[in-house]
Every structure is written in C-alpha cells, then in structure tokens.
Image 1: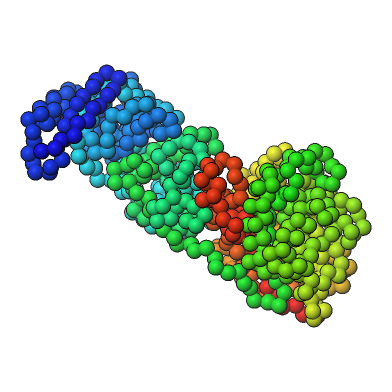
Image 2: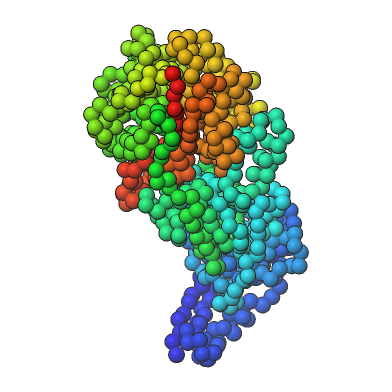
Length: 629
C-alpha cells in the first residue's frame, strides 16, 4: 500500500497527515493515526462563517475567531497570488449571509482544494472584503466536495452579491464577453447576460428616461471573470478561446461566450488602482473551477459593400513616424510623440495598418489620428501611402495635400494629430479641397469634392470632434451625468458650425449638394451633436441601414456603440447603397496590437500578427455609393 505524506506549516502549528492512494477503503495504521490526530485537533468551539460575515457590507464579527470549512479555492503563495485561500462551511441557515470567507496567509503553502480545515485568526474587513488573517490552520480531513451555489445575471441590486462573498458559485447562463480592455494588463474579462451591453446614448437621447433605465440595467448586468493573480502583464494570458491562452491566432472577441463559469466570488482589486475593487469570479485555483470561452463572434472574413464608389472612415490610432521631437502641428510647440515608440514598433504598426486598409479596398479613405507633420515626403501620411502602394502597386493610392490644395500653410490645425484623405486615382478625381480653418475645431475638418468616372460628384468631409476626456472641462462642458460625458456642449457647437460651413462653403464651391460626413465625432448616435446634424438635414446612414440597437464601432466601460459616423445629406441618402461597420478592431483585445512594451519576449511574437486585426480601438466604417450626375 502506497501513501503520501503532506506537511501543513502555519505560524503556530505543524501537522502531518497521510492519505491513501489505493482507493480500497483500507487505511494503514500510520494513516489512521494521522487521521485521528487531525480530527482531534479540529475539536473545540467554532463560529459559523455566516456569523462572521453578517448580512451587511462589512464583517459582523471582528477580532479573533475560529472557523471551520472546506477549502474551495487555493490561492496561496507570495505576491502576485491572492496570498491565501477560501473556506466555505455548511451554512448558518441564513440566506442573507455568506458561507465563505478568505483566509489571508501570505507566503504559505498549507492547504489543497477539498481539504477540510479549521482556521483561527483575526477577522476584519480589508478593501471591502471580509477576511481572516490566520494564526493557525489545522487539517480536519481531505477530499471534501462542495456544491457551487447558483448565481445569475442580471443582479437584483448593487449589493446582491454580498451574500455570496468568498463562496464557490456557478453562473449556469450563456454569458457574453462585453469587454476585455484589461485582459492583457490584468487578465480580466467582463461578461453580461442576454448578449453584449449597448451604450444607452446609442439608442436613446440623453433626456429620454429610457436612457437612464438602460444604464441602470447595464450596471447590474455585468461581472468580471479574473485570473488567479493580482499582477500586471501576466504571461501567459490565460483567457483565450477554448481554454487556451490568448494569442494572435487564438483571440477572445467581444461577443464570445462562456457557460457554466464556476469559481470563487471575490470582492478585490486586480492589484492596481487602474482596476479597482469589484466583484470578480476567480475560476483558476477553485474547486472544479472553469471559464471556457467559446467563439460566438467570428472574425470578419471580408469587407465588401455594394456601390460603384466606396468610402471608408478609419481611425488609425496615432499613426506617427516621428519618435522624438514631435510638435503641435508643423513648427508648433513641443508635443509628446504618440503611437509607435521606435522603428520596430512602427514597422509592426504599418504592416497591420496596410493590411486593414487593403482589406477595406475603398476608393476614398478618411483618416483620423494621423500625425500632424505636414504633407512632405517624410510625413506620416506620405509614409502610410507609400507602404500601401508597395503592398498593392505603385500609384494605387494618393493622398490629399491640404496645404497645397488650399494654399494655406499648416491648414490642418495645431493639434498633434490631424484628419487626412487617401483616394484611388483610377476611380475618383479630386475637384476641390477645402478646410474649415476655424479654431473651434481642434482638428480642422477636411472636405474633398470628388468626381467619379461618370463625372458624378460627391463631397466627402472627414472630421474628428473633441474627445470625451474631461481634462479642462468646466461649466456646460463638464460631465452633466447624462451619459454624454465631458465636452458635449463643445462637440454640439462643432456639429452646428460644421453644418453651417458645409452649406455655405462646401456645397456652394462644389456646385453639388451631395455630401457625406464621416469620421470620429466622439458622439454616439442619439447624442446632441449627431442630433444637431440631423436637424441640419443629415441622415445617420448607419442607423438607417443597420440600426443603432445593433451597430457599434467602439467599446467603452463594457458598452458598445458607434462614435464613427456616416451621415448623408438629404440629396445623397438615396445614393447610399450599403453601410458596414467593419469589426476588425473594437472586438479584439488591445494587447494584440503592434506594441512591444509590457510584453515578454515570447509575447512580442505570440501576440502579434501582421494582419488587419486590432490596428486601432475604433472599427472602420465602409460606405457604398452609386452616384448620380
């Protein structure tokens, strides 16, 4: 008969136990004696874990306590582990109290999942979670099982998970990945029930009571599934598809699903204030823990729209070919360089960006977030155009030199980034280029009137409105807590001025009322700036063709909506034949981008592919037109 011996070391007690491996029901004398010793050591008065936890947000009993239960998750070791384990008892018959608790035992390796243990230590609240800092851990038995408690989304209230804190739980539902922005940094994924969560202002105006109602529902319909560590930039990143680590070829997309996720429920942070205390399901290390994500949102295979002339709007997320000495516009004040930090990253970024633009196969491409460094041979827009032509054939694309076309130096504005325009000379010819040279716009709108091979005209106006970030926002531009975030008043003023400029200048100069407004307007479909453009006669073609309930190009705080717009003048709307949000970016983990920092040597290779996925945080928009003369 073979036995193994296990030693349990604590601050106060050292216990030795032996367990049989034969499964024959026979116990050797030494094993039986060890078992009796362990059982004898687990006598005495204990307190039900539920009594320690209580029914409120903080511990009902503090100070020295002794609890007894089964280890339902083993997260021992030194940082970045959770530095302890979770114990659950049979319950105190009070459904309002939790039957599990975290035992803090830093640097120890005392227990295994399924052990029954008796723990003595100091009970207290730490960062919103009740825990016992152990002074003694005694083994009472091994091989115990605990049935996970069923928990479902959406929650009934903001504190409804308190009764399950520290317990082994299972979510039987088919849950959807609604965000993974911090997957690479902290190993966490946010899930929701009934599909991904929609940005409320994508479907309802700020003042509509349904907007606030949907936001409240969204707030109760999400939970973080986290790895077992409280560290940053772990290798491997455990949550890819099918139980395999994340890689460039094994992604995890927003919209993918997980069913029967099982783990211990914790209220903790991810080890850094960038991911603060929140309810987290921790399957790794838990008794029968699992979170097996399945592909439910396939990567798009192609990007095609109907129409004789195709237009794309693409946010290229800080495409800079300057790594030091950047400025606010040509010859402006010193600015931080953005995007690629060196030639290696720039090469990786360019490969992905070229793959994305090639896949769009558009005749006109409006760009946002390209370096504002002029239009010379060494400019960022020239570098991107050259790389795109090298990947297709010489002369396939050209770019609009707004300075030359308008006769105004530095006409793009004095921001570090600008908007730009590429076009395919074989399909369209630029007739007139105009720029709204107005300091109301951080990035000056660019309008190019094109004619196609039938001599039909359309003016494409590319924009990048003020962001939602709150730096410097005061008064009406401060967050009004209506879902539109900061600078909404300013963006609305920009929208109104844009419509006026188009009507008074662009249309008059073009001699044609067909106008397509594209770009990152930093406003969701039903927010004030978009409604201001609607009142000026511009039709939201994404809403018309796809529907604001389904359409998205951006994911923020676990909610999906579209900031990237395609608005047609009244005369153009019937000539718009197709619109598509091309989901190559927003659904993909940000860690699959071109950057090499905060990645291990292996991850620099495994997390990167020179493909079109995760070139930006925004999805491109593709519009198909059949123009009339």
